[in-house]
Amino acid sequence: MAEAKDSEGRDQKKYDVMGIGNALMDILVSLPEEKFLTFRIEKGTMSLVNEARVKEIEEKLLGHEQSLEPGGASANTLSCLALLGSKVIFVGTVGKDRHGDIYEKKLIETGVESRIGRKEGMTGKAITLITPDTQRTFAVHIGCASKIGHESILENDIRDSRILYITAYELVDELLRKTCLHAMELAKKHGTLIALDLADVNVIKGNLHDLVYVADKYVDVLLANEAEAEAFTGKKRENAAMEMSSHSKICAVKLGPEGSIIVQDGKMSMVEGRLANAVDTTGAGDMYAAGILYGIANGLGLEKAANLGSFLGAKVVEKVGARLTKEEISGVHNVFSVPEEKPEVDGDSIHSSEIVALGDGKFNVASKKEKGKYYMVDMNTKWCECPSFYYHKKECKHMQAVKDYMLRQE
Image 1 (tube, rainbow, N blue to C red):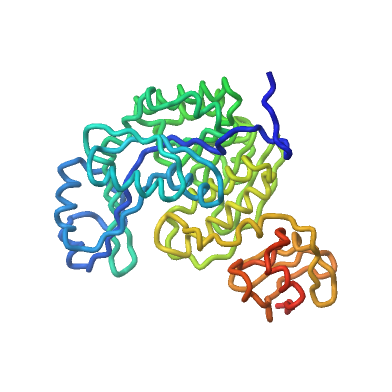
Image 2: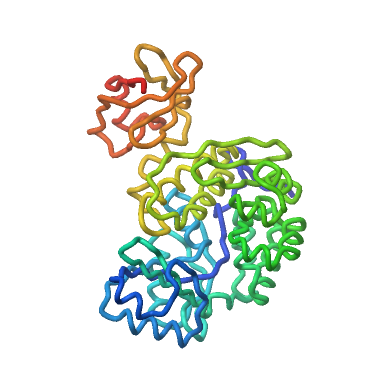
C-alpha cells in the first residue's frame, strides 16, 4: 500500500530524520601555553585515549573553565535540523555518570527527541585543548558511545522517519556496525531513505570494502568532502562525484568555501559556496549535512538543499565550536523560501529569489539586466530581527521595509 502524501507531496511521516551516532561530550578548554605543555600531547593532533588517560587529563583540567556541549557528528547534524524546525530522533548511548546526564539534558533542550540508552562505563568525550595561538588539540575517548545494540532501534521510529542518517564512524565498531545494518534493513522495509556521510579519510581507507558494500546495497544519499570523495573513489572532484553517484541516487561532494558538487540521477551541478570569515572549521561538514537532509525531507530540491548546507556551514566556521544557535540561523527560512513579492532594485523589478546573500553586507543579483555584485544600503530592519530581505510571510512587518532599500553596485 502506498504511503499517504501531504499537500506538498511528501510522505506523511512524523519525523524528518532519525540519526544513529556516537554520543561524545564535547569539552572545550582554553589553556595557557605552559599549562598545555604539561599534558604531553602533540599540538594540533587528534589522539584516541583510554579511560585511564582521559581521567588523568580531566584531573589536570580541574579549576579551568570548561564548555560542555553534546557532540558527535550525527548529534551535531540533528541539533541543527531541530533548530531549523525538523522533528528528529537521536539514537545513542552514554554512561551512568554526570556527563551522561548533561549530554541527554542538553540534547533535549535543542529540540532533539532522545532515544539515548545508559550503559555501564564512561560517557564518551572529545576534549579540545585550545592554546593562545588558536591551535586546537583533541583527546578522544569513545567510552560506551559505540555500545548501541539492536534493542536501541525501535522499528516504529524508522517507519515514521523520512530519512535514516548515519556516518562512516558508526560502521567501524563491530557491534555498532551490525546495529546500523539492522536499522538500514528496517529502513528499506518501510521506504525510509538512507543517508550516509563518509566522514573521515582514515575511516574510509581502513574500511573501504565495507563502505562500498553498504553504499551499493542501502544508501540513497551519499555525502563526502573532497578528500573523502577521493579516498572513496580514487578520483578527484567532478569525476569523484560522478563515481559516487554510481553507488547512490543522490550524492554531494563538499568543497569548502568553493561550494559543493551535487549529482542526482546522473545529472551533475556545481553549487557556489558562501563567503565567510573562517575562525574554526569544526562542524562545517555536520552543518552542511543538516542543510542537505532538511532540503530533501522538505522537498526543497537538491540545489536549494546544497545552498542551505553551504549557508549553515559558512555560519558555523565564523565561530568557535561545532554548533549553531537559533539566533545565528535567524531568518534562514526566509532566505531559502521563494516569495511572490518582487522588490524594487534601483527602479528595476527583480524577483527576490534572484538575489543571493554573499555575507559582509554583499548581495548577488542574478537577473540578466542587473547581473553583478551589490552592496545593500539604507535598508530599514528595525521591525524584524530577520537579517535577509527574502520575504515569504506576509505577516512579517519586514515586508514594509521592501520599499526602503537600495542596492549600490560594487
